[in-house]
Length: 355
Image 1: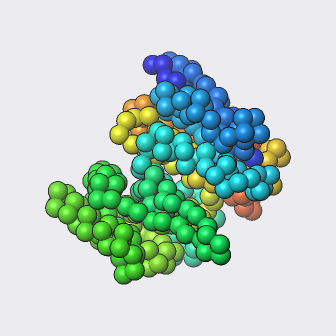
Image 2: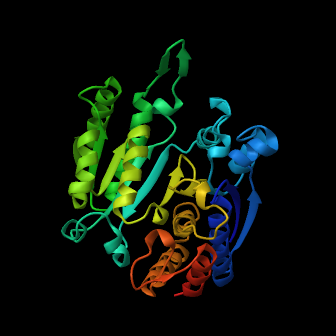
Image 3: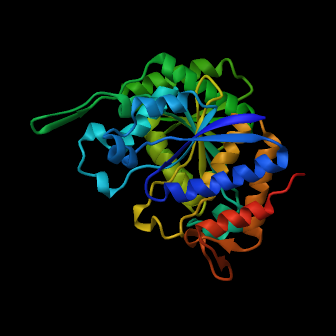
C-alpha cells in the first residue's frame, strides 16, 4: 500500500522526535510491504523565519492533499514578540481549521512499566488509568473573536448545536467501542454555551441507549481525574476544557512525553501529534522522549490507514522497549538504563516484529 504523509517537523525538539517516528514508519513499511512517501511542510516558528507566515497557504495545501499529517511541535521563546496573529500557534489553529479536523482524541493510559512514575499514590494507580478525552478542536473560544479595546480584552466563546452534535457523536461512538461509558464535561452552572452543550448531549443520548451518559462540571472533573481516574472511560468536552484536562491527564500517567493524539474530521485524512510542546530548552541535546510521536504514528496507521496489525506492532515494540528497562530522562527511575532520543528510536525499531 502507498500512502503520502505530510511531515511537519516544526520547532524545538520537533525535528528530533519526528525523525525517530519516521524511522519507525520506515521499518514498518519494510516489514509489511508498504510505501510511505514523505512531504516536508513548514509550519510554526520555522515557517515565520522562512516565509514570514506561520502556515503559508501553499504549505497548508500540502497537508490537505496528503493522506495524513504527522506533526512534531511548534513554538518557542524566540517568537514570543511577534504579533498575536502571527504567532507559531496560529499556524496550528489554521492547520486544524483548514483540514477540518474537529475531533481531537487523547488517550490517557498508564503503561504498567511506568506505574511508579505516576505522581498519584499507588492505591489510585492500581485501580487503573485508561481513558480517552475527546476534545472539540475547531470551535469555542480559541476560534472566537479576540480583541483589546483600550484597557479591556475580549475573547468570544461560541458553539452551535451542529458543532456540539458532531463532536458528541464522536464521543458516543468512541464509548461504544470501549466500555460504553461517556462523561460529558462542561460548565453549565455558569456558561450559556455549556447549557446548550448539555441539552444537545442529552438529545444525542437517546440515539445511543447502550452508552451510559453522565454530566460533570469541568472543575469537578479536574479534581476527579487525580482523585479517581478509574471511573472514566471516555470524556467529551469543548476546546479549552479539553486542552487543559488532557494535559492534566497526561501527567498522571507518568510523562507527557508518552502521550499521542489524533485529530480527525469527516475524512480519514488526520493530524497526528504528541501532546507536549516544543521544549526549546532541551532542543538539540538528544534527550527528548520520542515515544509520544512514535505512538502518534501508530495511531495514524490504525485510524487513517486501517493498518491495525502494523499499529499493534509499534505499540508492542514500545512495550518491549519499556520491559527491557530503557528510559529517556523524563521517565528515568532507579535501576533503569538511560537513553537518548536517537537511541530510544533505534531500540524500539529493534523490537518491531511482524506477528
